[in-house]
Amino acid sequence: MRDGYVVSWQGQEFDAAPDGDRVRIYSTTALDGFEEIRPGRFVRVLEPDEYDEMSYVRTLCTWRGEPFIVLAEADNWLRLEYTGGRAPVARQLGLEEFDYGVYQGWAPAGEVRDRYEHRI
Image (tube, rainbow, N blue to C red):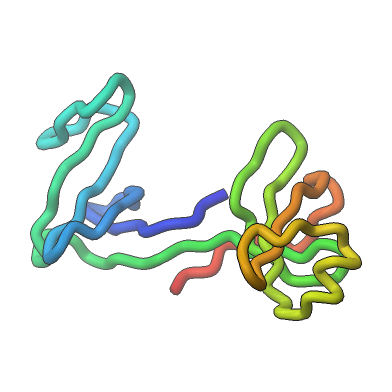
């Protein structure tokens, strides 16, 4: 499950975070030119001309026939955010209003369908 920036660099894809004109890329293994920022977490800062492509990846799915973003995973449950835009449907699904017009809830992973990554 992914929800965030990714960068293609030297034939590999890395989790990333834009930093002004630069981008920080992250790895869980020590690679040449990466600095360890905590055990098992390494970072390298790239200039715009050093990487191939930057995208935003979001995991989407359907649950009970309605569209959702997958926000998190814990055990056999998925934290979902409703993207259908209809408050009565969200309430009928038993979702909580996380923020004004933003509905979220936990769903059993086995009930979630059509899970896929979407690149923006």
